[in-house]
Each structure stands twice: as structure tokens, then as C-alpha cells.
Image (cartoon, rainbow, N blue to C red; front, side, top):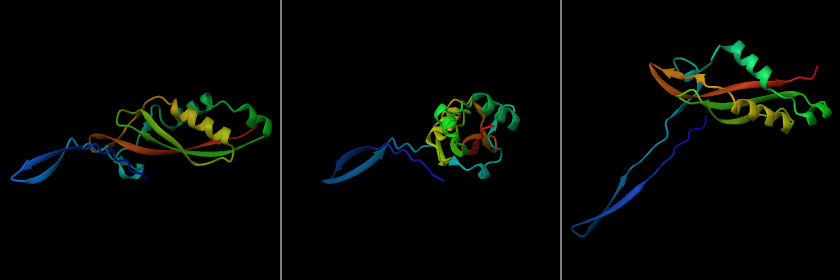
Length: 138
């Protein structure tokens, strides 16, 4: 699991009795991102798993070059569901072997509507979510 920390330091030097003291101010740390297994309530696509499958089926456009080459495969995409339900930072964690299929999987994930966010207790938190997207020619 990747944790992203954003540090913003504003350093200020103060001279007092011929000694220099450095004080860090305005330190901002990005909110933690939790694994799905570490939250009380996992993020949920609005409408549930069937609605997610329906969304993927409607939204995926098989790339023409992949059709012509007869490419098939499974792309596994990991992304973050933010505390407001938006999808962020999608990345391919397992390739289908066809860059065009992988790019289509990323496009579809990036355009997802808001989810119901994950929770720890009553607090909405950022959560990593992983989904496989299968490309099959019929």
C-alpha cells in the first residue's frame, strides 16, 4: 500500500540571546488512505455490484486496434475513493498485455460517477479500491 504524504514547511528563524532557533509552521500532511480491509464500511458503487458491472458494460469501448489484433485480457485497476466519493489516481496494477486495453480500463475508471465513500466509525475516509476489468471478444 502506498501512502502519500504532502509536507509543506514554512521555516522561520528566530534570533534570541545569540542562538538561532528554527521553527516549522504550517505543516500539512495528506489524509491517510486506507486499504479496503481496514475500514468498517467499504466504499460502494451507487446501486451496488450489479450497477457497477452495468456501468462498465455500457462504458467500455473496445479499442479498434485491439479488435483488429484479436486482443483479450484482464486489466486490474487500483484507485482511490475519496471521502466525498470521487474517484482519484487510477493506476494499472496488472496489465492485460495490451496497452490499448489498459488505457481503456483507466479511461472508464476515471469517468466513474461518485461512490458511497468508505467509513471508519462515522468518519468518511479515503480508501484504495481494486477492480478487474475483463476484455473478451465474442
